[in-house]
Structure formats: C-alpha cells, structure tokens
Image (cartoon, rainbow, N blue to C red; front, side, top):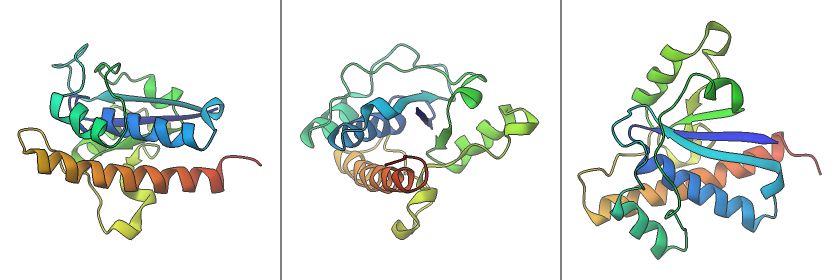
Length: 159
C-alpha cells in the first residue's frame, strides 16, 4: 500500500480537492487497492467541517465528489504513516518539516515536485477568492495529481 497525504492550511480547499481528484484518478486506473489517500490541515480551525462550498462545486462540475470529506488536523504520526506527505505550498512544507522528527525532515515535499512541466511550485490558495480562483486551483491540482500518479506508477507500483 502506498500512503499519500495532501496538506494545506485548513483542509477545506486545496488538500481535500487533491484528495478527491487523486482518489478518482486512482479509481479510474483500477489501482484503489494499492493506495491509502487522505488529506489534512496545519490549522485546527476547520476540523470536522466539509470542504468549502466553492471547492465542492468546482470539483463537482468536473465529476469529483468531495461531499463526504471532513477536515482534520495534521498529527505527528501522519509523517510516519504516509509514504508521501505533500504540501500545497512552501508555508505548509516549513510547518511539516518543523514538526517532523530528525529522521523524517526530508520526507515532506511540495505536491508539485512531480510536475515540473507546470512551471509552478505551489498551488495558489483560492480561499477568499472567486469561482475562477477555485477553477485555476483545480486545474493545477488535476495536472499535479496526474503527474503524481504517473510518477508513482513508474517508481512504486509493480506490474
């Protein structure tokens, strides 16, 4: 099993969107039994809440269902439990590395590290933004998830 954890601030926009998109891509590829996929936030202010309405709507327009997801806060054990701990931006990456024990400091990485062709390092935060901001974030997340799945298929999954 390959554990993939997506991290953003409140776990109500970017990281649950990435979780939902990646789950759908993994399912379409028939690889669900090979993955544990989750998301979490560095901030505890939204714990138990669903993703933002605009994130749910943007995802639904493209066939992704985020309705059952609920925000949770990142816990230190997540860094051991998941093989891939992926931050949506550099601030999240700093927070992850600050909480990581010395042997895991290099484990967290930016979500878009496997998508250098995008020319981006971070997924812009659509919170407080417009519908177009959520659509742009979803564009980036879809491309990032596709690149991540391709990378994991090439490096971690056996035929």
